[in-house]
Image (cartoon, rainbow, N blue to C red; front, side, top):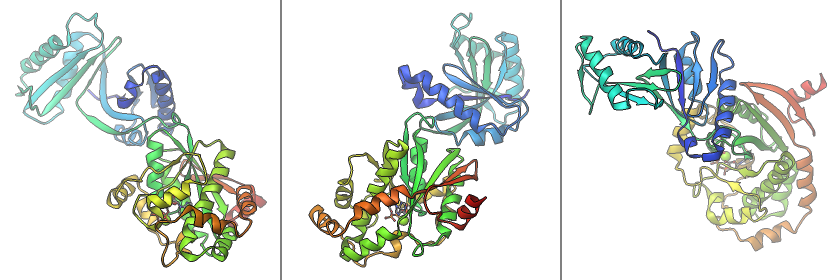
Amino acid sequence: MTYDMIMIHFGELSTKGNNRRLFVSQLLHNVRVALKKFEGVYALGARDHIYVELNGADADEVIKRLQQVSGIQRLSLVAKVSKDFEEIAAAVIELIKQESGHTFKIKAHRVDKTYPLDSMQLSAKLGGEVLKSKLGLEVDVHNPDIVMNVNLREEYTYIWCHDYLGIGGYPLGMNGKVTMLLSGGIDSPVAAYALIRRGIKVECLHFASPPYTQMAVIDKLKDILKVLNDYQEDIKLQIVPFTKLQENIYKYVDEPYCITIMRRMMMRIAVGVAKKNKSLAIATGESIGQVASQTLESMDVINDVTNMPIIRPLSVSDKVGIINKAVEIGTYDISIRPYEDCCTIFKPKKPKTKPSLKECEFFESKWDWQSQVAECIDNVSTIYIADGEESYPKAKGEPLTEEIASKEAE
Ligand code: ATP
Ligand code: MG
């Protein structure tokens, strides 16, 4: 007797009333996309669960893949049999034989209310059959070694004793799209993951200031996004040519205010790009108190440039938790590769931790940053990362990397 199916449990989705059908169909679509490399594996949707037929595929591999799909709370590796009692009992005995332990419990659930035995009766009767089969097991309803679940539904009965945790959250695509500011550090990829897990599609935006920042950072970002492809199969990476504007910031703004003004400019550009892409919000990897530019006072003057929502998924997370998450999702080793960010290059010795809006506006009155912001928005280059590979470049402005330039020439 083998387990031939995976049963997907939705968790939080079940509470969503009328939206439920939409949730299930989005999740079913995402599950099918995630499993497309497994030949013969097929997913079917129902009201309460999604069922995945393994058709001989390696169950561990399929489960591992499904553990990267948002919206899945729990997975059970199940055996499917008919609703015939004899058949159910034989399957339960066969499956229990494969387990190690001294005590067991049958946890039956009758979904089909027309079945003659109710859940309690079915559990008791199946338990009796297991005892009769003389496997040397005893019943323990409080703390059993083996819990055999029997789920008797309209058409079939599903039997299992192994559950696997999913990542939870919502199916990707249910909750809109945001423009994520991706830096190459540890935090922003974790923030991107948190959004994806919540069903929000991310498009990334990076500010590059060549020659002050190296092009190697773009490779690093691509590698990070290839890892994040496990959770969102295609991600857009947009690169803003930020050098000229940044040089002007350092020309016209007093050093302690440089980071604040730079962030305000980044936000303005991000909003422009987001609106072009029909993104509904901006997101960052900021965490309150982590560094000078991440105080509530700083965030206040940074937010002042736009009324578009700015989501900071890690705002109250601590660094240790963020690092652990980065390790878990696989971005940490890439994030710690040394690189120069536009923030570190021009880092002021004494950044202002409580900047005033008036001072910001004073510095910003010194030059025509508006046209430079518009120029940045117009000259964004785009790279697509899908299924762990760079798919195709679509550079609108000056190509920022030699690689893009050569591909463009083809
Ligand atoms: P991270 O680890 O994400 O780089 P950090 O702790 O180093 O974050 P900062 O460098 O102050 O913090 O950046 C805060 C946030 O601002 C980042 O999480 C990211 O969202 C955004 N950011 C910073 N630099 C860039 C950049 N060059 N391009 C795009 N976004 C950036
Ligand atoms: Mg950083």
